[in-house]
Length: 131
Image (cartoon, rainbow, N blue to C red; front, side):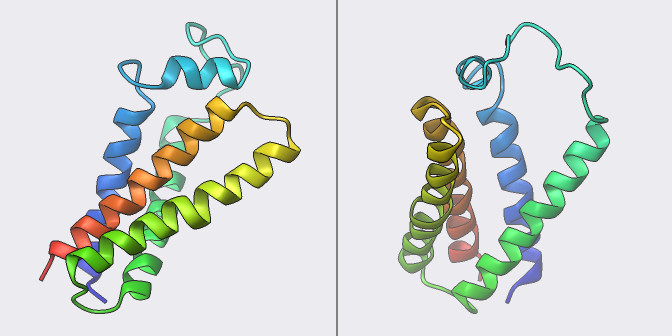
């Protein structure tokens, strides 16, 4: 497993999340789907350093496990196919189950699930190109 490539993959997913959930892309429909006002600050927010730090640790764990799952020097097509399988087949569908039982909007599933499809495709791209 290439640990450095997995670290870069984790950073890339963190950057994707910053864009994905930005005002320029999905933060407004995402907030509305959660029943929040996108123009109001959150009530009782956690400290941003804690949120970003813990989120990065989770992204790093996901990238390391994904790199382990791919094995050393995976071909790009294989890595991308596995990324699509992990993001759409495992993560987004698992969110779908939870969101179904918690009566969440399909819009929310599309945004959150779509992010994780993109995240794992990025993992596959980086790990498939890194040799």
